[in-house]
Amino acid sequence: MPPGRESGWPAEGSKRTGCQCAKTLAIPSARTEERRKRNTICKTPSTIFELARRTLGNAIACPDPKSITKIVFTHAHPDHIWGTIGAGGTLNFPNAAYYVSAVEWDFWMDPHLTTKLPEQMHVFVTGAQTNLGAVKDRVTMVKPGDDIVTGLSVLDSSGHTPGHISLLLAGSEGLLIPADAITEPAVYFPHPEWQFAYDMDNGAAVANRKKLLDRAATDRMKMLGFHWPYPGLGFAERKGTGYQYVAAA
Ligand SMILES: [Zn+2]
Image 1 (cartoon, rainbow, N blue to C red):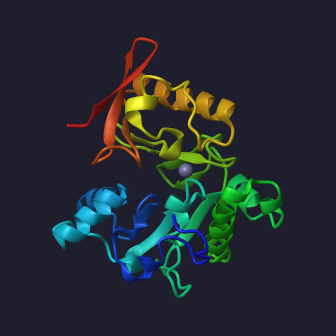
Image 2 (cartoon, rainbow, N blue to C red):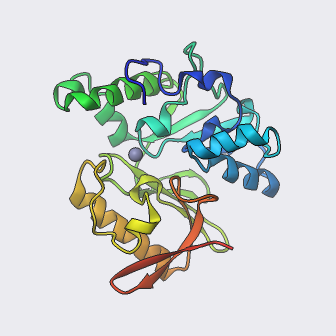
């Protein structure tokens, strides 16, 4: 990410439409099954996918940003919130309400945070404070156990960041959204005990990663991963001392 962009990364986000909602959980106002599927596609994030989307033009339909009414921040890392505002400082999703864990908000909005983190993290702080600050009048603080809406509940998965949350969507087979509690499935499914360099509290991150995988495997629950191979949907099956990732058909 380019340092020094106070408005957040990528600055050209204001010129994009639709899929810039990557890595947030965006809830459209009209929740038809078709719309839900399209949003799931659009939320599967990666630069590669974004490039693919541009290449494909409008082959993959994305919702109008004005139709997004709720956005959940699982945590405040650059690749999850820096699309909140565009280069001109305006909100990319002008009609949305925002949800973030109170712990996460308090951590990143600490005015003295840069004095507590190494210099290479300062750009993270600047970006978080700029993007979170832009929605301070629209944000609802949540905690594990809360419902964002009926059927969408907040799970504790702190460790990656102090207030990182995962999400559980109720339904026939359910949908567990671990966010960055489980990043690369080829690594962390078989070895949930391995540490991830960007986890801020390794002990908590490993414990919560194990807890999420155990729950997903026990309940045969579908999972959606923000950093997983497209389309980011799969299951956890027990294998040896860990798990294997099985992509959803
Ligand atoms: Zn992250």
